[in-house]
Image 1 (tube, one colour):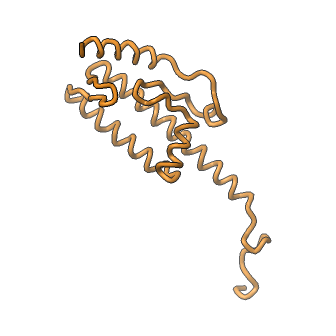
Image 2: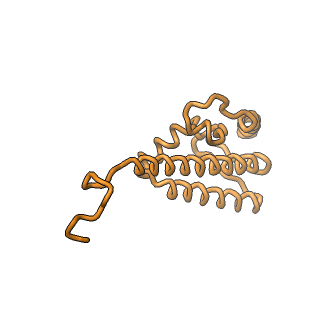
Image 3: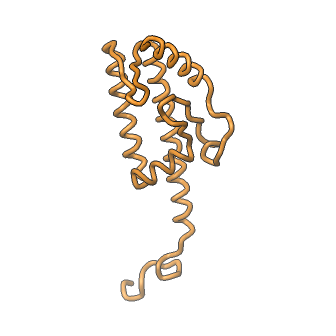
Length: 146
C-alpha cells in the first residue's frame, strides 16, 4: 500500500515537476519564473504567495525566504544522509530520487520567492517616490530648522 502510494506520488511529482503553470495570472508572474506544482503545496502561485506573505508575515519577505532556506538546508542534509522526509498531509515518505526532485522544486520556489520579493520592494519604492513630504512641498525642513 505504501509502496504503491510512493510510486504514484513519484509519477505525479515527476509530471508536475516537468509541467509548470503556463498562463501568467499577474504582472509578477510575467517577470518571475512560474512556480512548480508540488502535491502538498496546494497549487500556490505568485499571487497567492504574495497574499500569504502579506497576511502571515506582515509583508516580511526576508523572514519567509529564510524559512524556506532553512527548510532546503534540512532537506538537503536528510538527502545527503540517505534519509527520507515525510509528508504528514499525504501520509507518505520520500527519499532518493524523489527527494532530490523535491529539493529541486524547493530551490525553484526560492528563486520565485526572491524574485517576487524584489518586485514587491520595487513596487513599494515607486509608490514612495510619488509621495510628497508631510508639509506638502519639496522642502522637508521647516523654516525654524534652517
